[in-house]
Image (tube, rainbow, N blue to C red):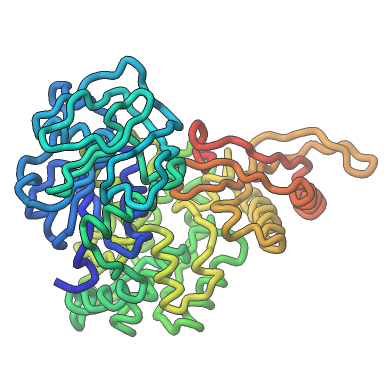
Length: 516
């Protein structure tokens, strides 16, 4: 066992929308955390020798038939446990306490008070603002548990068995709406579990290189390079590990942003000295997408064609055994959860269908990382900032930002408008930090305008900019009016065929970040 994950935290997922946030908050403390299904075996939970467990929240009521329960073996492990919301109720139920529906539910901000001295609330104020989201509450804690905190509607807003290191909180310390939540999690991680902060980009790179070399040996590895952050960092990491045994295929679908193909080739061929095979399949994709306007149909066509083009290039190479992908940790968590309860909002396009189709063994060097961690690793590997902080871009590319019929002319119009928006955001220092994702959308409608003394009837551009910590929820960015005015003026003056610019102020939910 390497020293990277010694003293890790295992998180049991009971279906909360915040489960990924728990892992992120733990890792922010320099401690490795991994999410597992609530019914994972103890052998799986303990594969990285955790120093403690966290039980996530969830949508169920513990007393309902078939409600997810606490694995009995978890209590026999004799490690610290922190139950959050439903996790607290599962811990209570398993130990013989009482959980019942509350007459007054708590959703949103609440004030809790704690008086009892405990390692969990060490050095925290007596009154804490917290974020509640529950309809059930603890009526009677298990034997050996002390009440540690209370809210107006929850007499046991926190409880603990200090001797065994088992704790429960009714609120969500992982969300930003609980200002002292990070401090409480720190207390659990360090004071109660005794972890050491060893999770860092440098430690990850060292261990990942060793793991890659052990997996692939002297074999060659194939990577689908898109120019996005995930595939770029995966490529740099693989190149560090195996050098010229890495072969990259870059497919230009014609749906890329302005000058993107030239930039990707320059960075990875010329600056990183990586082997990159380039296939410009623009005409093929445009021909297949002609007159296709339904979003899911676009995605499926692009996904199928991408696999076809990639496969053709891959088959030209001899002796390729491994295929690398830039899969990251949220993808892994969502894939694991999808088998139990998930609804498809929209399909995603990546090279996920390639291993089965081509018979490759899969290499996923980033599968343990969140997006912000991917960027930190990329920086530690020496990738240029403009690659590390490249705006998130969907697999189907501009095809799902060019609403309606896709033509080369409409794509060029969108590319130009998008480039103006990004350029002005960069000039205003709003592209990194102040915004998380920004882009232009071309609508399949026309509006009447006046340019000079002439009436115009041209298409409409929508600008979209959001702020978010995790992309699960997002809010629209409050960009300065002067900036929006300048962008609008430039687009109307410089992009032929556009006479109107609007700004999207829809949050997620109810909208999604992308329009299609």
